[in-house]
Length: 172
Image (cartoon, rainbow, N blue to C red; front, side, top):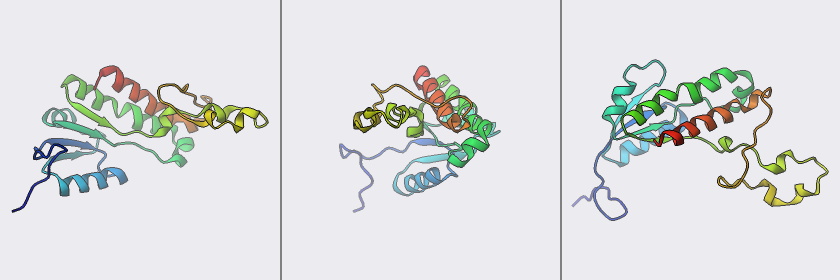
């Protein structure tokens, strides 16, 4: 007898429909491959750019997973507007449609969204630089510190932080 996949309470996993955005990237392609081979779920995979099916596919899905992003550090300085568009502007409709249709959203991000630690900004000769506590990021306690606006390197972190704040505000 073949036993299907079960959840933590040993109940069979019920199939759901997942709208996967950004499935062509490294993490997305591997996640899709794993989920498609190990679960009974149905997938709608799409490119977020100029896809008129976005709202309809989100409406039909039980869950939307957004992995779409430009997240290559070498591009942060050379393509800052593309970075902002990809990580914030292009993600806006996903958040809007999930919120409007009361759909669950899993939005991938990185530690970049939390900025730098206080220790990174202390002068080199400051004795506090030796204290490991100044290098720990705590989401609930650490201040959010990014570099100056003219340093394009922060375009990714700021765009990711802003979309996360929007998701939190929408309650998606």
